[in-house]
Image (tube, rainbow, N blue to C red; front, side, top):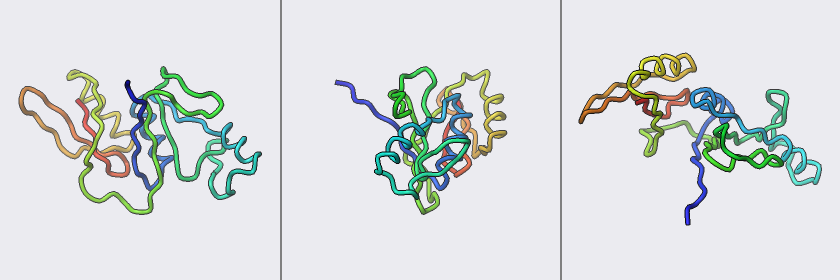
Length: 149
């Protein structure tokens, strides 16, 4: 039996990270405002658990992005397929990631994509060519490494 999963990434600003990765991947930032409204109306939410951002209520410490073609729960706004969840943590990133994303764009588009991602706030860390392949390792706005190939 295959399992449902998501990648969860620690962040100092989960909403800025969600905005970056939505733009980088062509994903959609999840809208949890209906769920938040329902939970608030039922008295299940502490007032400091949410923020008002981009004309809607959002979780203070969480934000997620999902693939636009994947199904999602319309009542909760939660993706049911490919998604990234960003959770607020108090500490800054320290050291190299033990897990990272590879963004596949094709050899002919790497330079164009690297340039676009730099415009969104990513930085080039280094470029590698070995064993018949090449990639560019970049860092997102909070320093998390990812590769473009």
